Amino acid sequence: MSPARKATKAAAKRAPQPATAVALDVRKTYKLYIGGAFPRSESGRSYPVLTTDRRFVANAVLASRKDVRDAVKTARDAQGSWANRSAYNCGQILYRVAEIMQGRRQQFVEELAIGGSRDGKVTHYRFGRALEKKFGVTVFGPQGY
Image 1: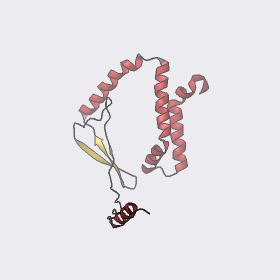
Image 2: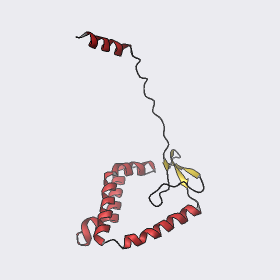
Image 3: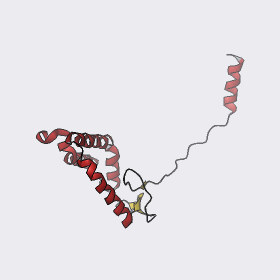
Image 4: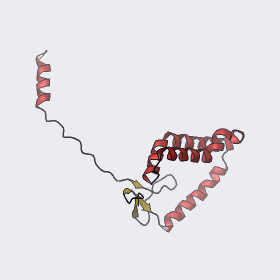
């Protein structure tokens, strides 16, 4: 072994070892999503989301009336561009949403379980049925559904 390599190994032995990592408890906050952005609520308030046995899950933003008005106005404004799209393009967009939801299935099922659904098989089944009902015609077409 070369002297340089021996010196490197010796220095590595003398170097302080990193402390054991401490898990940081980052509390989740569900935010408003309006017009492709996450605006701050006018109220500036939030409330805790709890499980059925009163354990903390996350914080949720408490929307004000103005927040709701902004969301409705944005949705109305978006309706025009959605109506001008071809049925094929709308189908592509909805199909992509279904793909994303299917890809994140486990996360959705886990969050539903936190909310009080006890049986994992039932939760998986219900999520699958919800996807089928919401996107079945988009994925399979009116004849295949």
